[in-house]
Image (cartoon, rainbow, N blue to C red; front, top):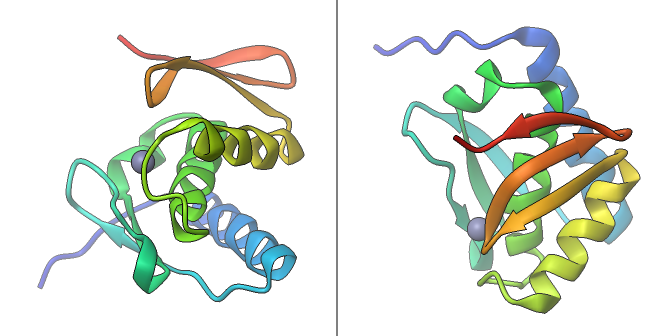
Length: 119
Ligand SMILES: [Zn+2]
């Protein structure tokens, strides 16, 4: 039996973000936590994993992760411009802007403050 300890408040907020997105798009995307290093979306099955590791970062990073994987579940399976269009649009609802390094963020800003920067 593996126990995963994550910050409960952060988990609740991640769930709330997913609920809001599901409501807005009339979807029923499912999320579960993984001990793997990276999350993964199975877009066609409308489900994704959120890595426990993401909980160690700023809350905005966690929201970014949920939005990123949710966007795949909307049918944008790669990271092309239409994917990025929706990712940015949805992040904006949560006050988050992204500076891209190809597919993933080089930096994330929350209400103007830099809250994540890739090493
Ligand atoms: Zn992706």
